[in-house]
Length: 355
Image (cartoon, rainbow, N blue to C red; front, side, top):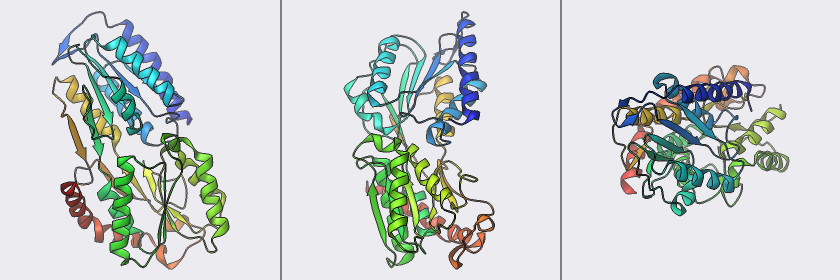
């Protein structure tokens, strides 16, 4: 786990205990009873500490606590079975309690929520599930639509053959991203470049298999002469294995799209990142709850709403050891971004309307 996040978690635990002990005087803000309020985040197994999606969600939680003074908790399961146990314990403890919120941080937990009904009777108590559009009793859902940003990333990769490595099949956010990337790449390249898709696993464990991801890329580089494709990783914590390989092979000409957070500085092989602003989204939801506002039953946010964006890596071309004409200057990816951005917005809206 990176030291900055470890420090934050330590401060969080100490602060939460102090706030809990000092919350005897109950006051109300909207429907939230401030003295009794608590927000809990259930992250994905082994999801914290990789500077990724879960870390950004945790940062949004920290920011909310600092701004509103509401105690918060982090639940960090080691696997799906433990996650279900923690979820059941939270429901049992908070079924009739006022002003409690549980944020369930992954579409991988959909089945858990379906099996365990969230029948909350307390005033102001809620459950929020990330990356789902399923209707589940007692649960609000929010999905980040990755289609538009992925379409843009695919179009910006038009000069490359592409390898999409995804954690597992059947997860809607990943499937939307795959479709968007493939459509953008095909339209921009006129279909003359190859696209290959591979899944790392059959289930949610694919999000926590960095060693397997490393070996997948290692084997491809070993078997493909002039290995110079663009890697589009939809892997969660498993992405660390791809980065490890790219950083270990100084002669590699393959590039990778950074995923979920800004990957500047993580590898010289990342020309741009597809950033999911899940921390900002979470903070907005929690502030609305704090003010007594109702949440929508389900909400979809994408490129046009600013929930996801493509961020170019500063000085990318200058930091490369191996350079070719496809990316000999930073202006090349900047021009591609400008060329295809509006098209990606339109395609995202069309995609949502068709669904």
